[in-house]
Length: 175
Image (cartoon, rainbow, N blue to C red; front, side, top):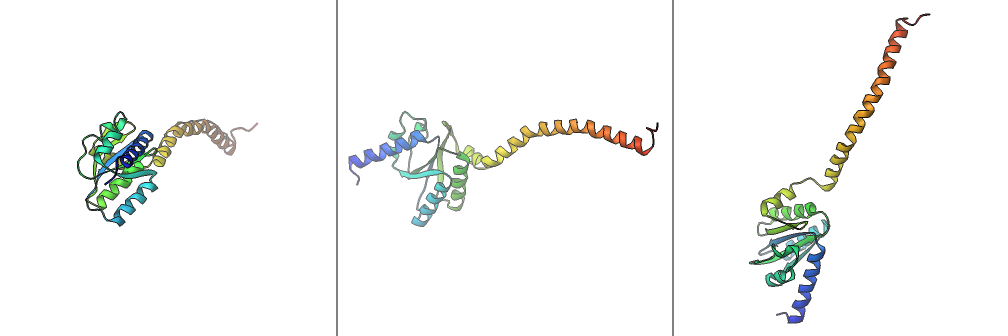
């Protein structure tokens, strides 16, 4: 059993993590093996996140007064917190893929950029395209009008060149 000092240190560390993180996913797990837990932690780190198993009461106290307060209130069973300062889509994809492979791993709640989300929204988030793909599509949309303008401007010169070329071939410009 942990003494009061260790519990206070855990609470402060979790509070600091929650203050820094913009995106938090609260998960439940049951009967995960050490190898499964190691694989999950490695995948979460690869997505730029942090994963910690937490005591429900410590999590609730650590989140008081923070944006994550609503999602960490009244937790039951075994709980863990996965958080990231970066891309929530990458973390949601990793956790969703892991939950499909391990049915004992479940979602309890989520917080994305200060807004609580439900389980269906977590699934929607996991199904989104990666950030790089969204940026590529956005750049295409921004770039498309410029390409069309250049095509129209070039068309005038090209059309004049075609008319002049046909006139030369048919000797229309004979002096």
